[in-house]
Length: 152
Image 1: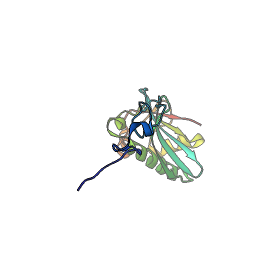
Image 2 (image 1 turned 90 degrees about the horizontal axis):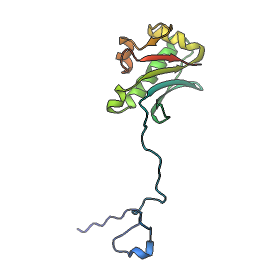
Image 3 (image 1 turned 180 degrees about the vertical axis):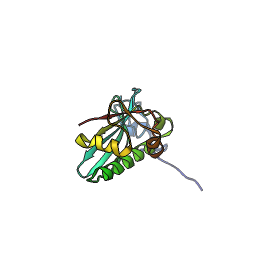
């Protein structure tokens, strides 16, 4: 059996002059992209924010590269909101691969006035500096001692 594969419309049977792409390999558009494929920052924050009736957690580098995100339904009372926050955090951390999951440098809760109540439900004081404790580490996978910041 003779199998022939073609990539991007190129075929070894066709002459190069018929489909001249310059020096670009077949299937790669010109001009080549100069956008970096990864972050160059050493900062990796997991940010939780409201999005309508849901919470969205994103793992974001200091230069704005979003590595992963997770969305969960948000509850109304502090206990339900804390469960949703914990779930969103753990899903976002689970979406990070390998060493990135161990490189989270901060948790940022953008829950406005509900932020201190959520920390209280976690058993963490909202007094500065708040940090991930051993119980939250077991639930979400972020190292104990990682700072937690509250944002409006």
